[in-house]
Image (cartoon, rainbow, N blue to C red; front, side):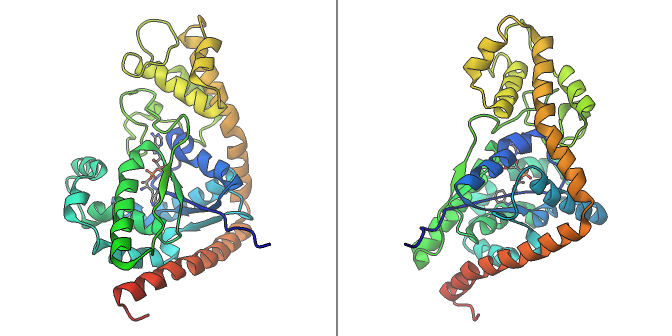
Length: 334
Ligand code: TYM
């Protein structure tokens, strides 16, 4: 009997920096888990990075590092596809087509566009504005059923769904309308120094605010020891009154898989200092094997080059199928 095809999980990260614990707990660790049930495709979204000025050498280096990091954290290249967005031209092609089915009004409502254009007043480029359309193209090219992301990408996924539905209403069932996937904890990790704001790669003002997946154990522990806490001494989840402790509780739960209630009970009466150290140690233990594997894989240039080439070819072959269908539907010669 023929096996039913598995559903597809698709996601991506920009190589504008190495992943921090927000990226990892909010999205990347779920990518790995979903391999059990889904056919997974994970992308290094380098084209998206061009919406903010990048140093060319640094971007190439980071793209490769992020590719290696996906493997190091457990994306299995025997089961899943990993590739770099710019190596598969179908993304840019579909993005252009979808631009003609996306409305200025809906793009104007994107909070990330508003935030980024406030931060980059000297470079509010058209790419920054149509960024969600390229993201929609990424997802729709592979018929993704679910998209594991952090909370800050929720609005982009909604616009992707709207574009897909609009296109399907005009041309029939061309695109799968994807669902977002959020983990139970960690979909919005906040800064350790500013727990009212999400942990973000573009915010490099205070390095103690961000914990990177590849930070050394000492650095991780120190950053957690310095984490801002709140008045009082109770370890209780209450994001409005206790943003610092609530963030640390979420991080602990996302790393260990424990529930908030069980964690509160476990640390009842233990004090902030003890708890901060425990969170730091849990993060260190999670990050340690990833860092080791990252260093090991980084030494094997031939293996990485070969894998990149093979996976790009397979991914492009998949992308061409849906792109071809779209082109026929809209009347382009193929
Ligand atoms: P990016 O590179 O900003 O972030 C990668 C993933 O990490 C999540 N994330 C967080 N999760 C929890 N807490 C945080 N503080 C935190 N910061 C970031 C993001 O939600 C994301 O899931 N546009 C995307 C990349 C992209 C993409 C795609 C994603 C391009 N094409 C197609 C999904 C599908 C972005 O800039 O993510």
